[in-house]
Image (tube, rainbow, N blue to C red; front, side):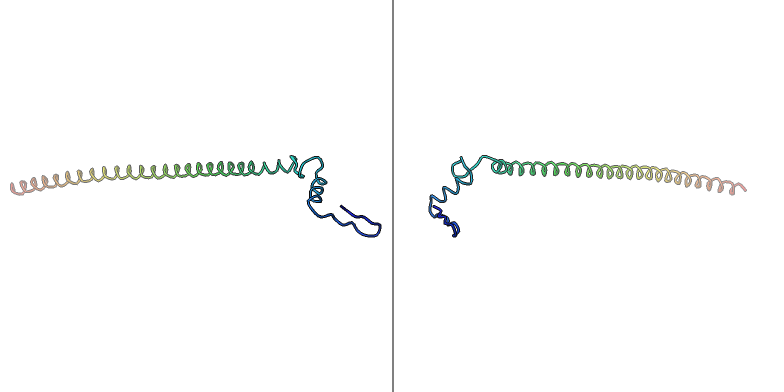
Length: 125
């Protein structure tokens, strides 16, 4: 109970009745001062916000992983192309070396035949 006098300030009442009356005074018409208003909507929005943030994080992570895999695939394709180019260049080089060996062997054989012919010609003189 509040005692009000003309020259003195109001004193709050003590006890359970004062607490009940204070709660009822804050939110009239609801038991215990609880409401189903914006505070409850905000409280329920927090898990939705957390879920939304988690979904956004998951989506961004998946996008980054896809970009990473795409970059790795392009890099692997470049490496494979370089390997293929190297293998082709080595195959061409090996073929050229075989041809050079065959031509050298033919030149040696021709030199031997020329020497034999020269010896026979010298022997005739």
